[in-house]
Image 1 (tube, rainbow, N blue to C red):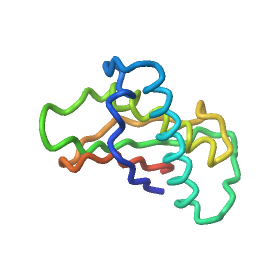
Image 2 (image 1 turned 90 degrees about the vertical axis):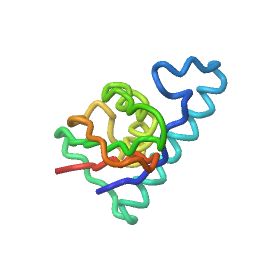
Image 3 (image 1 turned 180 degrees about the vertical axis):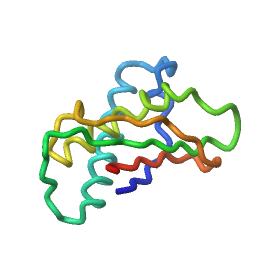
Length: 116
């Protein structure tokens, strides 16, 4: 399954330095987006957890200007997305097995591939 999600808000990045209230609001919003995207990708089918690791591949399409972010920061910034996805699947997010982060173009999007 491939999920297409917006670029995380600057408050969710490790170097974001946002007020805790602003960060909490963005965390809640991004978690909901991850949940909704996963539910849509499942198409009404209930996921049957096996207890095995679930590979997660993150492809980042950077912002139109500026440097590309660090790969480890990209993974940290999408934590809220992963939490929402785990909620939708009915699993603990510790089952997610992140693969190396890849970069592709500059359209300000995060593409998260689940499985395989």
